[in-house]
Length: 293
Image (cartoon, rainbow, N blue to C red; front, side, top):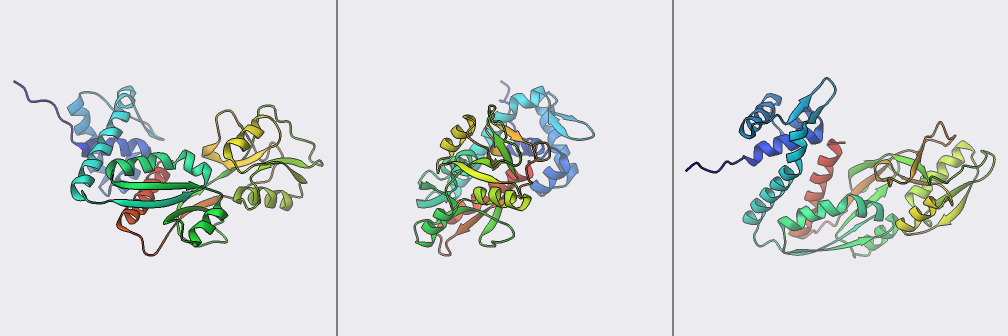
């Protein structure tokens, strides 16, 4: 009787990393291995599976149809493997961690990161708070949060560790018609204080473009609904724009350029072991996702 076929998780990790990074050089840097070693791992995996997994051209490496078919399964196997190792090494890691994050970030990127952490550490309870950045800062300063992700202006703030950089764009609904440049531009934004609101109004003031707040809402879903209804335009991170909203090009629509913002991770100096492990996990995961963009 033949032994069941097995696949080394390290080979799957090499495959997933090459896909995420779009090439062998970047994948080798992330995996801390030589490019030839990573290439050899891919060849071994393709030999074991009997199919070609990657398509190479002069610009980028992309998965073949076979590669696409196994990519999601490969990710799950790697996650389960990491969870198994973590549980074996830290079977007693338990406790609670209070974490705060801006609503848009908390609803787009954070859930998958926290889900992976919970699978590895099922005895750690997470309490997540979503607020505006300055409200998160106040809650953190009052001792109500262990870990907080804050939007910040790279030129003004140095607190915490930068874990994400956000290019910002102007967005509108499909029914939105921009007024004449001499007329006030209707804005949909969060109440003061809001980093994106400050970015938008500062850029418009610098460009000499009049504006008015047409709709102010602290809820991300409410702001999206107002933009969809054509009540005004708004500012969002480029990779968090809903599919049904329209990105306005700065030059074409006579809108000023928006400088990037950052997401910084700030932690208490006396973190518990579960909180420290979560902070390390967030940094690693966001660095990995940033490299893959």
